[in-house]
Every structure is written in C-alpha cells, then in structure tokens.
Amino acid sequence: MVPILGAVRPAPSGLVCFARSYRPFSLSRPSVLPFSRFGSSPFNSVFKAFLHSSPAGKQPGAQLPSESSEIIFLGTGTSEGIPRVSCLTNPLKTCPVCSKAVEPGSKNKRLNTSILIRYPGPTGQCNILIDAGKFFYHSALRWFLTYGIRTLDAVVITHSHADAIGGLDDLRDWTNNVQPCIPIYVAERDFEVMKKTHYYLVDTSVVTPGAAVSDLQFNIIQEVPFIVHDLKFTPLPVWHGRGYRSLGFRFGNICYISDVSEIPEETYPLLKDCELLILDALRPDRSSSTHFGLPQALEEVRKIQPKRTLFTGMMHLMDHEKVNEGLLKLMETEGLDVQLSYDGLRVPITL
Ligand SMILES: [Zn+2]
Ligand SMILES: [Zn+2]
Image (cartoon, protein in one colour):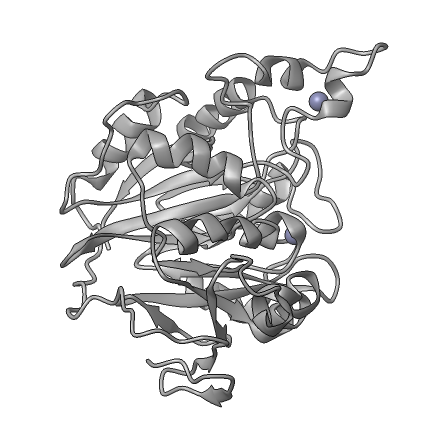
C-alpha cells in the first residue's frame, strides 16, 4: 500500500489512505505471519506464569526473544490517571486506592489505556501501538526503557478522545530522532477530529519552517479488516456512549475493546473463538453512560466466552488486589478466567 500525496482514495484492502507526506521508507515485512490458534499450546501456562510473576516495576534487560510475540499494557486506567491528584490533595478524605497508587511498583498506578503489540519481523521486532493518549510520553518513558522498545511501526486508533489521541504530538521524538515517519490508522470520523485537535500534524503547511513536529502518515480505516505490517486487524465497532462509535480490534484470536458502553449485535460474531479478551471495566459497582462497569463486563464475558479475560480502563474505585481476589473466585464457581490488567503487564501471545 502506497500512500498518495495529498489525496484520499480507496485502497484495495478496504483502506483509504491519506498522506500529507510520503517518503520512500518502509517497515513492512515481506512475508505473512502464519496465523495459528492457541489450541493446546503452552499459552495458558505461560500466560499464567506471566500474570503472577511479572512485576509492575522495572525489569532490566527484559527484552523479547526474537521469535516471540507479546502484548505490553502501556496504560490501564482512566483519562485523568490514577492516582487522581484531587484525591491526594483532599484534606478531608483519604482515597484508599490513590494512596496505594503512589507507592513504588503499585499495580494501582494507571495511565491512559493503551497496548503495544510486538511480533517478529524479518528485520527485527515490529511494534504496533493501539492509542497514544495524553500520558503516552510517561508510559513510553517507563515501559519502552524497561522492555527495550525503540521504534514505533504504526499506531492504530480506537477513537478520538484525548486519552486515545492526546499523545500524537509526542511522537515527534520518534520521527525526529528514531525513524522518518509513523503510519497512523484511524477511522474517518476520528481523522476529522484530528484535523481540529492536531491540525498542524495533518496539514504541515501551517508549521513554521524549521519546527520539527511529528511526521505522521494517516491511513483511513473503515469497519472492515485491514493489514498493518502483515498483521490483520479486524475492527470491532462498539458504542462508547449513546451515538458515539469507538473501535475495538481483533488481531489473531485476541480481542481488544478499551472503550465501550454497548456491543452491537453485529459485533458479537467477530468475537467468536476469542482466546484473550481485553475489555473495558471502569468501576466495580455499575456501568457509566460511556463505559462498562465490572458487573456488565462480566456479563459480556459470559456471553462472549473467551478463554481468558483481562480488564482495562479501571478508575480509582478499583483496587487491583481486592478486585482480583474477588475475580479469582469466579474461576472456582463458574470457570471464568478473569483478572484486572495493570500497567507494564506483558502477555506472551501467538499470532
Ligand atoms: Zn482516588
Ligand atoms: Zn473515550
């Protein structure tokens, strides 16, 4: 797929490409990764081992073996981040979760929801980011260093709220100092928002000559599968509040839905045979108008029947250890394998 300078046109894969700049630079892999199912693979035991052994703190030299694939959770919290500043400065009340979240290595410390998918390419690891929110710099500062991540081969966008796109400006450090540009995959409605929020990244003619902003290559996606560096992404359209569309994504047998208040009927078939579901669960007691709460998220898990589920997008009412303890009991009573994720969690995957 070659982006066309200053033009919008349909691409063969169902993509529409828009590029304000194109350079002869490619991070594509020539060969297609074999898509395998986890089946009876050692995924389950490896995954469990990681869940229980991967600390939220620094893991020096924890680089990925060259033939392995994995997901790294760069953020698992709400837009304002956890701890909330307002909780820490409240003289009248101590917030139990936010006070724990300031302790080093706390799994209650959460930045904006985002994951990085890493898989082997012919010239090294391919790193695909889902969402670059307001705290992207802080997530990258912590986890890119910890896990030895250097390049960003693409960014796939779920929707255009600030906690999903607020970090696009920070990508300048990559395109100025690491690589020439970064392809962005975004739905047209969200690209329209970016034209306002990040107008200078879409139309660089307004940028003062010499100023070095992010060099982004925009690819418009529709609600049909698309390929990024040989990895197939299937959009999972969901409602994120009434009348507001957000996208989850399926890659391999992994489904990621970070911002959802309702899953439309037509999306459920796309979630079949899911090995790992990563799903929005804002608060422990109830749903909000824009996000699943834990009770509804669990109902969805019962309906979708993934092999495993990791929740994300948790607010400060979700205490990592306490909620996970309760969720563990569902394994005994219902056979549900559900847990909260946390920032820095690495999950080995098979693609
Ligand atoms: Zn709090
Ligand atoms: Zn949102």
